[in-house]
Amino acid sequence: MREKLQDDVKAAMKAGDKARLTTLRMIGAAIKDKDIAARGGAADGHISDADIQDLLVKLIKSREDSAKLYDDGGRPELADKERAEIAVIRAYLPKPMDPAEVEAAVKAVVAELGASGMKDMGRVMAALKERYSGRMDMGKAGGTVKAALAG
Image (cartoon, rainbow, N blue to C red; front, side):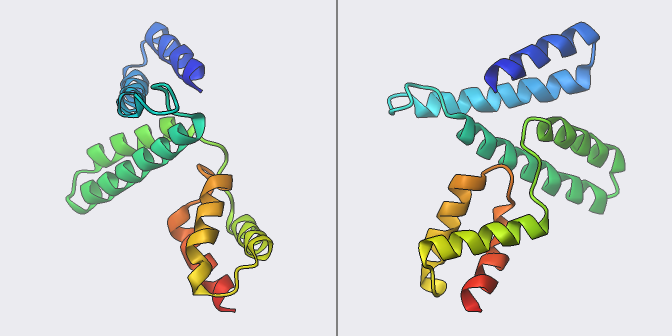
């Protein structure tokens, strides 16, 4: 993923695409910050691709929140800028799961773990995050997990 990001930075520079270049550099800086924080750990100063995907999901969430605030504040040009950044970041994530896929994945994990009540929600959510990081919105999956464990 790091190599693709570097290649895309070079391509954006050659194409003169300043908006895309700025977003790609921001992603690179966020990854570098995480790498620095990981120094001294088992990862030898480099976070994994799964950690990068988690980081990208957080960057998207932050931009979605900002876009909503800009819309509410009557600043559509800034909201559009945030949405353009979201589009660039999403290109580095796997295709998101649709609601039917999320429900099927939740049912499969619940059955596999033998989860039977709300006390097992943490285990189920941890397994889902491990398997579907970057593809599943964990905030929305929480409601599906609750429904599966309650019924």
